[in-house]
Image (cartoon, rainbow, N blue to C red; front, side, top):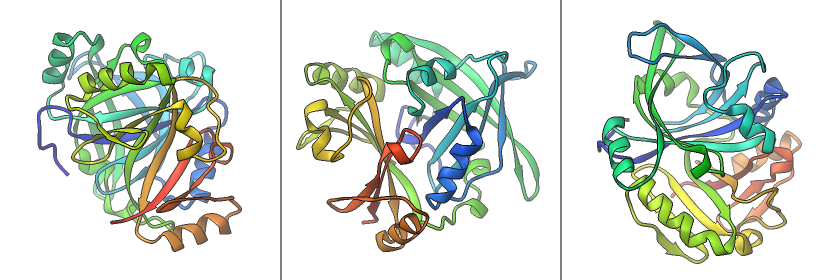
Amino acid sequence: MRNTSVDVDYLDHSVVVTVTDLNGLYDTYEALGFTLTPRSTHTGTAQPDGERQSLGTANRCAVFGENYIELLGHLHSSLPDPWGVRRLAAAYEGLRGYVFGCGDADHVDRRLAEQGVSTTGVLMLQRDIPTPDGVGTLRARVIQVDPPLAPEGGVRIAEVQGLHLIHQPRFLDHPNGAVGLSRITLVVADEETDRYVERYRKVLGIPARRIGPRHVFALRVGGLEIVPLSALDEILPGEKAPTLPYVAAQTVVVNDLGRAKSVIEGNGFTIRRLPGGFFVSADDTRGANLVFEGRG
């Protein structure tokens, strides 16, 4: 995969957060049928060649051909927390953020400033990733939308160097047949829907399409949908929002819904049917409703 635009053009990954039981989070996603990458810790620098410092976090990921799910934990309260992981987890653990991809972080940061969207500026992130040919270093230049403007969670845009280090072929075969992350679902108060749709129009640089109750931002790969609270039971029957705004779900595309259902139910999870697929409740997935839909 490569960036085809200097601006935002794909959903890079979702972020499922915990500070209490990182190994339990890993175990849950493996039981859901995902192959996970080895554990990796994060370091950052203020400058490209600066001294690396711990960012206090570690992850494992379920990677697909062009994006992935990140299972992220902050390791200890004594460590730095520049990304505010503990602040996010204090509200609730689960699906607490997402990262969009771009080809030029400086370009995006300038555009956002011109549109009145405040950010952290461009920050550097690095982590070492083992490969069959040795250890490689993933480097990313990351923009975070200012937390007061994004109460839903960590909203970031990244220019990534070394995508091949993430999307290694040896990690792409998942027992549940997953092949991609297709969308994030954000639920907001009905009276706030228009404001959030307008804000994401600025953040993503594209307008939304209205599909029923959904306001859909479709990117080259993946996307985001904004849904009013009054429609939550329609899209995720039986689910409640613990807070608003609420990052309610992530949707994974699978090659074979029957195969995915068999693996997931076989490992003890209860599924709930949806048109074109099914979902597993946030109660069973560590705070992140997980929707599965068929390819096509």
